[in-house]
Length: 188
Image (cartoon, rainbow, N blue to C red; front, side, top):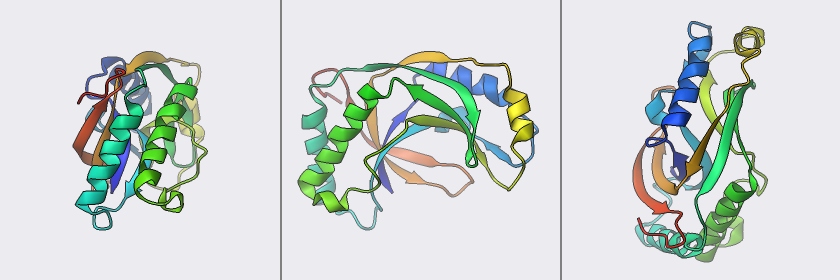
C-alpha cells in the first residue's frame, strides 16, 4: 500500500515516550509492542501498489509537493497513552495543523483521480500506536499498567513521507518512497 505517514526516525522525544510506556506494558498478554523504528502516524492512504500506476503516483507526489509548499512544520504533543480495542495509542495534538496537511494530501490525490477515489473518511484523529492487540484480551491490565502516568512529549513534525507499507510480521513495516519537507518550500 502507498500511504502518507509521519515517521519518527529522527524524533528521540517520541521514541523515548513510547519506550517509557512500553516498559510499563512489557509482559502483558495479547500485545505486540511497536519497535521504535516502526513508530508512525498514518495520515492518508493512496492505494495498493498493484493498483497505482507509476505515472499517477508521480502526479500525486508532484501535486502534494506543490500543495504542501506553503505549510510549515507543526509542533505537537503526544500522549498520554490510552487503551483502545486495537491497542495502545498516543493521541497527537493539536490536530488542526496536521489536519491541514492531510487535507492538502487528500486534495493532491483528488487532482489526479476523482475525489471518489480518495480513500477513507474526511474525519481523522491523529494518533501513534505503541502496541497493537494481537488477541482478544481484557483491557484492564493495560489500563492499570498505564494508570497515573500521564506522560507526554513534544516534538516538531518537519516532513511527511510517502511510504510503501506492509504488515507481514504482526506490525507495520515500510520503505520510504519519498519525503516532503514542511518548510514553506517543500524541498526533499
